[in-house]
Length: 149
Ligand SMILES: [Zn+2]
Image (cartoon, rainbow, N blue to C red; front, side, top):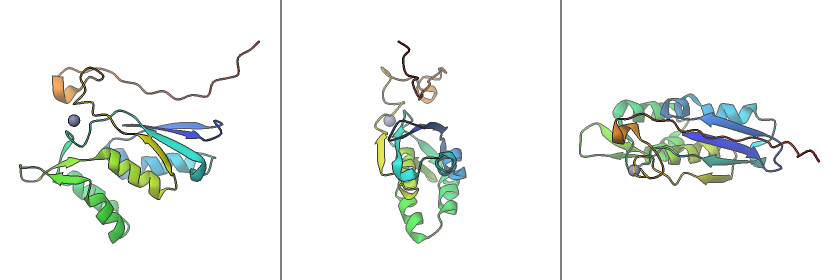
């Protein structure tokens, strides 16, 4: 999942690739810390990712997230992003929800995006999980230089 950051004044941008391992490892917190803009002045946009309707994970992924919770409140917050499936030890994971929680805990109040599921929307996205054919997606963020006159 690409997570794009911008300072509200447009003076700084950042982008993180946040799969579940990156989220566990703190990639969002790390990216925010690297910005010179305070978190309260950043906006974040969650780019296309597999949605909570299709992102099936094993118990080890849930355990990895619960292990990084610093207190019972955080643990409870993370727990709700894992919905047990009919298959034992499998969960549907809400990466968008986890990212929103982590961004909010880091001080970012303005969070947008996170409405797509790359698996559910073949007209918009390829999905290796869906089609068994790989493809490429890219998200970009940049600061445009003033046009020369
Ligand atoms: Zn889906």
